[in-house]
Length: 452
Image 1 (cartoon, one colour):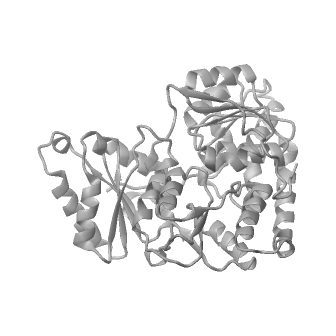
Image 2 (cartoon, rainbow, N blue to C red):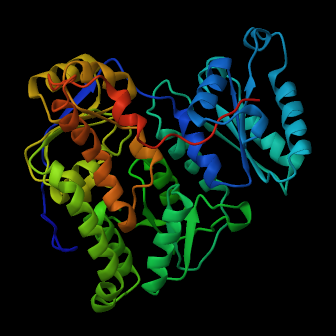
Image 3 (tube, helix red, strand yellow):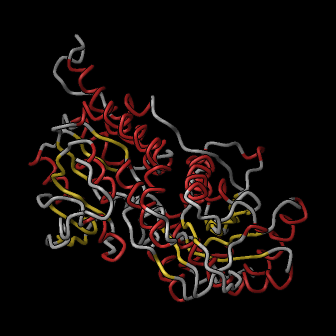
């Protein structure tokens, strides 16, 4: 069911009690965000100060060989660094100098903290200040933490963008800031729609190039495109910018509501808004409807993984006809999620945080038609006869705004389609699949790969 923007229910799941769980975690490391961030910021280099494990993680997740010289790498902490027998700052200065001499295209360097660098209390913030003074003003050096000790993997992007905000230049102009790393093609679609609406003073964070870095001030209004940017939002608020509250642009309904909230802020007439959005809305509805045939009437269980869970649950329940049994999220940011929770009909359990064993027990009891979970849980659940969707694929695949709405629905329909095909197969006739790899083998894979 679709709702005209501005006529959303007032409460929905907003008053549903939240089950807060603190137990064993099953999440990726925050360093994973470098994979899509380095693609977005085309003159930036991400230097992780960490262990060989950090280097192997990035190279495996990214999928590019070292000799391809992608714009990320790892300054590996050896035993002598961990034991305090070497000056890690001196070595770091030397490595950054070598990097910049070899890569004149680099305009900003991110020193990314990891579990090892934080355990030994390596002050990367001070190192970033020192290196900025040494190599500036052409080169900007910024520090943030990608440590996976207390975070889920999407918070790596949040930490990165939040670290950029204090150094953004000031402006008194009224401008729209679109916040969140999107694939270039998706960002171009969003900027095109905003331009057609007559909103031309639009900046993006993160910008593709350092010369396009946005300025912010008390007249800046910003709209988030990703639901996991709580720290970035708080940093922008401290600079005097104001957030436009809206659902996130997933599916036809979410995209329309997001655009309409921005349009109202800039005084766009309703008639003009409808004219601009009519055609892409129709395409999105038709694309979702084709995939929703397999999803309608099915149940879905969200394990906490990426912080995309609540907006995706809204999309699946309202546009695809699914029933959400449980919506688990690593962290529930009430202010950012309020527009989304208001759109989800009461009924599903809401849980915040992780206790894997308890959540697995509930999923086994509920026997949902589809479980959205991390890679570590997918194959065991598949072996128990539960269809799964890898949550991380929803982060690496373009799924925002109108033109990707059908692709988003297809990502959820694919495992159910596979399950149906296997059920009628003479070898897999029991109805149980052979594991998560079959469905995902036909899916999209992650970007790049490297280490320094």
